[in-house]
Length: 274
Image (cartoon, rainbow, N blue to C red; front, side, top):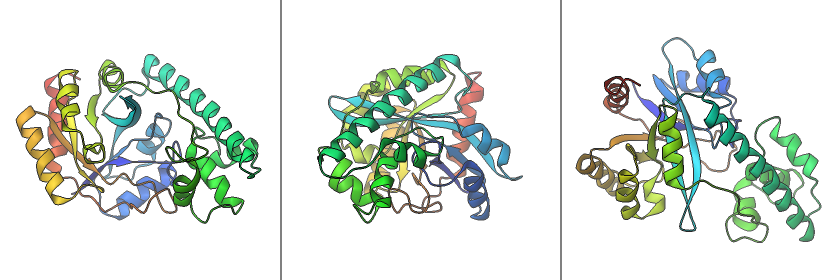
């Protein structure tokens, strides 16, 4: 039975609730999924509780980090989502995102798009406010046709209303995940295009590499699997699905992670008494 270890919900920038995600995964024949919202674990326990019999949910997260001016994402699996230090760090990140969203709205106002910050918060519907909600507000008000267009034209990196935000370094993210008994994995290395960072982060405690990803071609998949073998890293994978109508067109079922890779993750946890 297949697995998908990179999925988002309404706790960050996904469009499915945890209940909807688990139902959709079950109907598509998955046996294992992981909820990996950006800088949030709020929907991990609801996903576990709502999962139909036969579907396992691995606690996960995707931490946004900064590496020499570029964005690098670190996934964490099997981490203790009740860890106090983890949650305090995530609260700090959410507060940073809120301030960032306010600044983006101000920039858009200056560009003759009179959005209100309250409308952005309302669209978040209790989730951590972020760029996708600003993008949705732009769509709702008719300034752009799609969320993707909002990113490409206005709020993506280096666009007129873009605002950088506080980030951890990849090394800090790895240490944070390890501190709450999780397995840190470098997300979609093909989007980074920088193999030296893999060697550098391995020395800092990185334990896995996302080999299968919707953006990876066949050559990249083979290349990163070979790197896993050479560096003794755990291979993982996932679709990076944000749900229908999200910021991309990647849907659940586009990636099937081999069951043996999930078993290797579980065996690592047992071997190291996690």
